[in-house]
Length: 72
Image 1: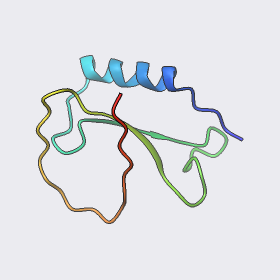
Image 2 (image 1 turned 90 degrees about the horizontal axis):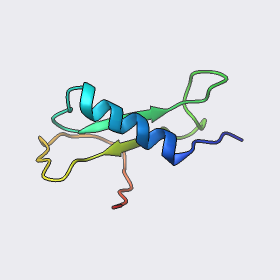
Image 3 (image 1 turned 120 degrees about the vertical axis):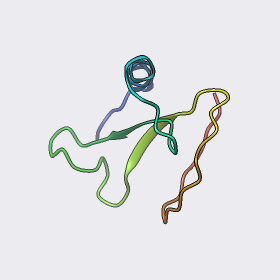
């Protein structure tokens, strides 16, 4: 069982906000990986956490995946 503490991931996203360019489609996004293999966190699903700053206006894109969005 893997453990991905939200506070650490949020801190990484906040660091990205000040040092990285914001992606025009996804804003700020990190992929959580299995630390033992470097692959996906789960064998059947990719796990990402995304930070969308207030006022962000994304460029539309096409994808075949699904997303679950939570507002904090």
